[in-house]
Length: 113
Length: 109
Image 1 (spheres, helix red, strand yellow):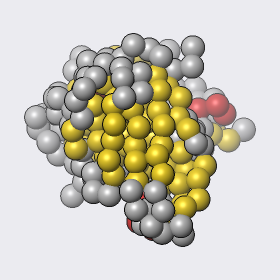
Image 2 (cartoon, one colour):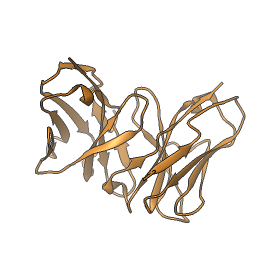
Image 3 (tube, chains in turn red, yellow):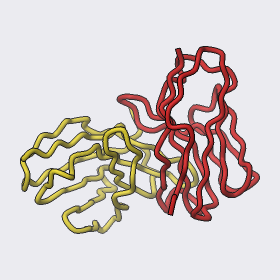
Image 4 (cartoon, chains in turn blue, orange):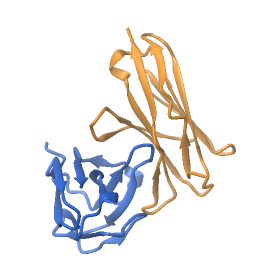
């Protein structure tokens, strides 16, 4: 009963470095999402994947790329990290749409210096 | 103007108190509404959906007023374990889901 598993939990990057955040779900959900959460702001959608083989931009996609590797896995890549990308990142999954509610992973705290 | 607005609080209440949070949304096309709970440095967890007729889950009651475009959450008989941030969420259909910034609640003994 792992639900949604994210790795790593913490990461410090230097400006310009790249990294990939990994996410996997074991609930057989079709839809997966990447959000970022910043102080004083609600969660903002970076990218989502409505189903295996599809990805779409959310509200704040600039500086990020994603890959839906299979039904279980959805990764987020920062090609050239910037201090503005310092945030807490959450992966989530849902049934066919968000109207079923999300299950979130435990988050990745990323600091870019 | 934020699409989903919440009073950030914090709300400080004693154990046993009743506390209510309100949330307003600006997009009249919003169709589905939720309350999530987020503990400090943890992920959000779905607390309850919000239905037009209002719905209750134990000590928690959610109400939706479409005409005024606001959602409320009432917590009765507050427990120490209710201390958390409560996120109001509106979905306009498809994959456009907007999260409020949250209302912080502290329940004190």
